[in-house]
Length: 425
Image 1 (cartoon, rainbow, N blue to C red):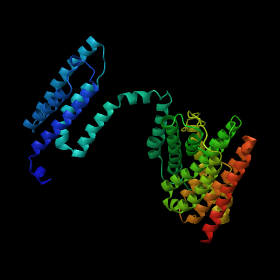
Image 2 (cartoon, rainbow, N blue to C red):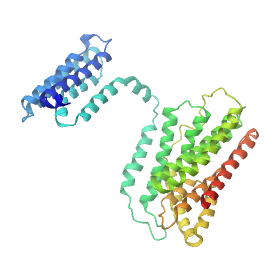
Image 3 (cartoon, rainbow, N blue to C red):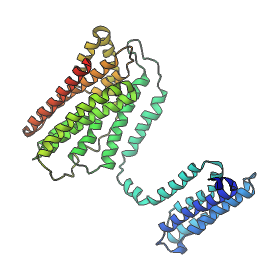
């Protein structure tokens, strides 16, 4: 390192320009290894010489960049002539090599003015982008006309609407701000959008259990209903039951993620309690599944991969529910205290619990004790599990009813026990 520090800066910059230019040129050579050399304007040597030319014109006249930019214009003109003839003679429209040559010409000012890690990041990015051409092409085939609309919607929700909303409470009755309501919508929509992307692009041909787990990130209740209906079409319901409880396990993961975002104190308290419930959930999944032995994996994706996770109607309804539960929770806390919140949590569990739980997470410690929020969260999940049990038993096949009742019963009993023990400690 001492030797390097004693070398002139210009020498180090020159060596870096040559090395980076040569690496980029060699990558171009490898990419066009089967192309006739006459059809290319140059690869390894030409790209390296372009980088050196940029170094010379930048270094010789450091106070006047007009020469450097003039050289860039000449290079661009020559590349333009090459591109014109490429289109005219070969009917090829690829522009990547020309852009790479221009970037290589600009390496010297980048190396001189920016930190080395940024220069290396640029070079590595070029190499990766060029090399994954076919992978990007195959990946783009998975997109339909809806994908960029979904991305645009999420950007609107998270990047445009959210920063514009006021932080002041809406009113004395609704003691929450529009920003608090919308940030809850963004958090839940973000998790749902992640689930959608994983199911569609990372695991498009996943089997029942994996599909159910990914679907549980979006909604364990919706996934339970879908799987229960599917059970009537399946000869073996073991995987269906495992999928239902896999989705239920993801409900706890989703709630923990939301707790870490909105109330880390609650999240810290929930981790050991949810861990106990998740262990029981894994036993409920594993015991009946492994008793039946290994089964032939299915390629059928049970959860609907084309569902839109960012519907504005759903977002507005979620926001209204959030505001409603804010008013209701405030009323219950003022009139009935902590016991009232626990009872309310059990009642709310029959519906979508996310708006209610997010409302609890955003309550200050002066309104509700951390322990009350934790207990209310677990009670709401237990109540929601009871409702899912009713859905599964009512909609699903008779063969899985016993497993469903035993499994959800174990989760509910564990949840109640965890609440009681945590209050005694």
